[in-house]
Length: 563
Image 1 (cartoon, helix red, strand yellow):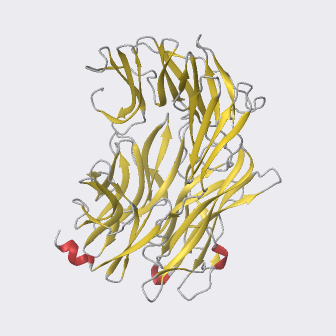
Image 2: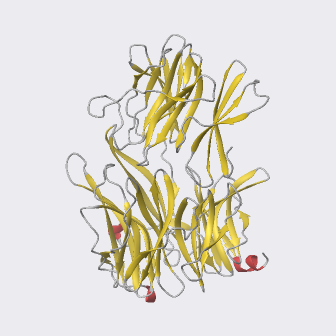
Image 3: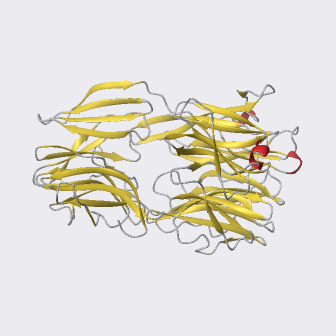
């Protein structure tokens, strides 16, 4: 593997006599995936690395041998960061040639990617000289397939009917009689369909019971009421390529007996909409969310930011204003910084895939009247971006952090407000590693910025907003939710694997540098989501695809003092 690259995972292996080719994903440290090929000429006894079939960012679905050639299926990223279905072949596993796939027309063909959609080929299956690979399109609820004959020519084979499961995977098998089996699974259910030689698709088997995932969001406002929002996806389907996903949300609060119970929405108008909340001086509170606004019978819509404010705990709620009703916008975080409320998110001209998100920041003095901030928030050409977290720098300046995507690479970005003007932090402030920044916390005389750089979770510490020093969070494979300041130190819910045990943990640190996992005593395999202070306890939310739990840790300050 090239120097200073890292290996991610194996994809597939295929043999042609004593020659063996193994395909996997690697990348420059923290960079986008590249397809790597390893070759053995002695039936696997020794190996050498070959240049992958595609030199730029890409993804492999699988590898097979057909008509005397190795064939790799997958996708390549364009300069506009779109994944486009692709295939490559090689006679010797060293020199690779791109295959010519059929041109599918979105307007004319039954199953084809929109010009702005991602598309890719999954792992292929072979019978004789015939190879078939499932074709997936990012925003289409069907699964298609392409066929390659013995001369290397590809053609569309057909597609399944609509299945209202988001991101269902796809597999295939070619029968000796010429028929093809397509299998899909997702949301605790699966189904298999047969594509006959005449192109007709016939259901073969259905398995499991469709069960959309049940997920915890991070605590809405950890320093305020501390409600937790559980959500499950709901698909509104017009047809295979026209659908919308919304989330059914339920609000939970801790009652007087120490039990997490379902609670009414406060205010009632916020039901199912809330995304972010913050508490200010005197108990003033801002709640922000987003809602789909359907504009016509064709389901053209925009995602609008909405919200409420109250100046004190017992005061009535007031609806907020100033957010766009014509653009497609979403909010990620909100905080009170000095005498200013600051919200971070993203904004695009429309909700369609033709327009790209850019980072967006809004501010308010009174919590009711909001205005979009002017600043250097534009996304790179052919890329997109988002503002994810809000914090305060030493000295009091507001800080907003996020990311941009350019040529399939994630790039960390941040902005600070200096004397009324938003300025982007200088390129290279966070080093040259790819990644994203997600949140900020105040550590007295320093600011901690949490993110994911060079493939690892990190905390970036700064005392002046100019120089940042990084602390790596945990080991490879460990996961950290939002880091929170707690009595005696810092805490984060997450995931840890050691000694063959993998499960939810509470990460604790007295100084935000050295971290120690405390396993949640659950019988289920969970992942920690978030943590917040509740008196002299910590509440830790954790969940899996189908189960949600909340655990309480007594007297964390005493435990932190021993670390």
